[in-house]
Image 1 (tube, rainbow, N blue to C red):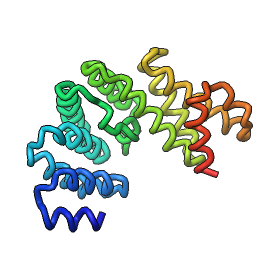
Image 2 (tube, rainbow, N blue to C red):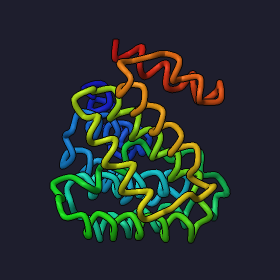
Image 3 (cartoon, one colour):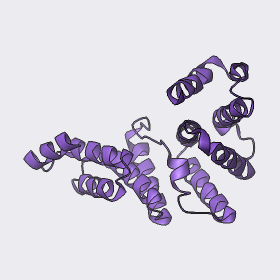
Image 4 (cartoon, helix red, strand yellow):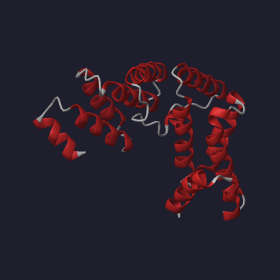
Length: 209
């Protein structure tokens, strides 16, 4: 973070450094600082960086519980990626749990899920949303104390989404992760997953150990 700040001081219009600074600050839960960095990057109007800057700003707004503004940023970011024709540079990590910060009302949470589904469907990006679900599950599962949160998150999504093929991987991941802990970490439970998905979950469990 300090290195990127020095780079920006030398070259204030260094867009990639601004984005990187924002991403690091975000991971440190310095959401206001991250938001400021992304807004500076957006102000540069660099078309190659604009979608990712908007997407990351949207995540900051979700983390700050400014949901409506966050949805607008995500929508604009995905529109920009439609133009560039590549969604892989967007990082959906934790996007599906950030929006629930401080929200206890189940109806509000269901409404938020419906908005996310509609938004990502609009841009044919449900695969990106599914990646967000998987990474959110990885984050929650890595802390055993939050097992109930994983269960609640899965149940809430299933109530809204149903058994959609587009999100099947995410649900399999969460189901097996929950079952693993419910069965006293029996490794045989992991065999229910295809090997590629199993390797993802095993890495999570290994880091937790």
